[in-house]
Image (cartoon, rainbow, N blue to C red):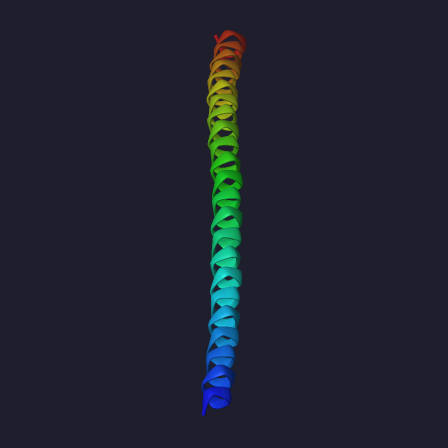
Amino acid sequence: MTKTRATTWRLDRRISLSVLLQLMVLASMILASWVNLQRQLDLLQHDVTMLLQTQKEFQQRLETLSERSLSHEYRLQMGERDRKG
């Protein structure tokens, strides 16, 4: 009977160590996934910030082109008036 208890205890201890090891591996995988997700979010935030900056620059260029276009059109109209007048 002592031998049976010793075998059972060893088996339980091995199972407990195995479960503990599996839990540690699972926890490390969860932590690694969390870190990877944070890194991906940081990269996404950087990309969105750069996209917004580029959009602002593009908007400024469009406004400048629009102003130039209006200025040139005004000059053309003045030139046409001078020719007709």
